[in-house]
Length: 483
Image 1 (cartoon, one colour):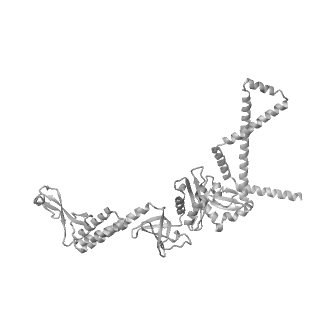
Image 2 (image 1 turned 180 degrees about the vertical axis):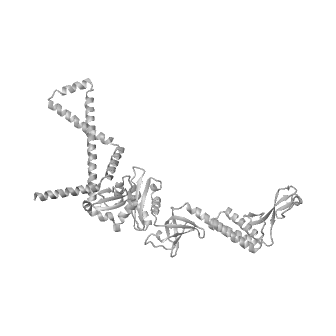
Image 3 (image 1 turned 30 degrees about the vertical axis):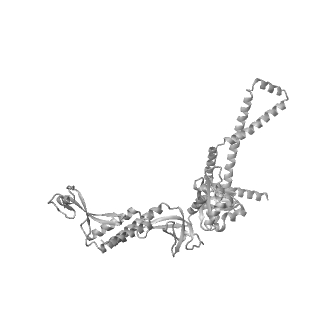
């Protein structure tokens, strides 16, 4: 076997190892497979062969393995050796031992070597594909800084930090953004696909909402460590994004944290996305308030949930705020709907007043609200009475000296005594109201809200509308009769 072939093959393995990231062990295994394949292709039936590789000396040897057998019983001379012949090599050999012989077949020439080299290259490429796929599969949805290298009809090609190429499709490019060869851009690793023909292919994006989240993680330490949580992102890349945030620290303003001092943090993200507008809104558990926040900067008067569909709401805004709430080409309303996952119908106050069905919902809501308020007032009155009675009962247990003073004070007129009792009741009432307001637990308030919602969902709006029409008709008839 020519030594120049050995040098050539080891040089190729070293280049692939350093440039493509193939491990030394994988390269050696590929070389072994290469030589075995080439040998078996030229010497059919001889399977008892292995390869010994010395990467330091850049040498490899083909070894034939023979088993020591008793003299006179040989069946296959390629795999067996007599005991006497074995002991001629080393007297310590016994029957059953394995002996390795270096071989250098005459017919194992350049043609077989080239075939082996091709096989080695194929195996190394497969290892390379596996390494690329394994390396990038764990980094999906992560952000990296890549460099633009070229553009064709289908993709913009960028070089990853390790030199691996990645593709960016048309839908993953920000509209209107221009790219020049050599420009550094931040991209999101969207997915890694493995193809049997092309190998692993990395796809990156500049339009994914996840890119906005990763950029804020880089700019805002509180987002990175989880103190501020980005709950939802709605994005129309290149134009506008809405980001809903909350905080796990009650003393921290989540919106102000993302905006940063003088807007420095959000401005860094905007600059990276070439001027894309950012609306930062607070995420809250109250869905009505969350929807109102999502429609920022528009002012919201009321949010009415549909009794027929839990995911539909009607939002009422002042007449002069209607266009602002809807936004240019409906963008503000569209992004708010994506952000909150609600179908949002926006109406001005005038439109709401002229909508009979909507007015029926509002009237029914007001009725239940009045009933709840009346129940609360009765509850407060009962508590007030009990507190006043407790106060008067306590006055009967005063010490003797205090009681004597009280008796002297009662020497006045009946009107003064009555006024004193009235003042006591008023004072107790005020204390009772404060106590009861504190005792009203969040759980009781939630139960009242759930009862109201359940009642609202059971409203027969058709019956209400019919009743309202009948009342209007009766009033018109009365007016005609008067005339």
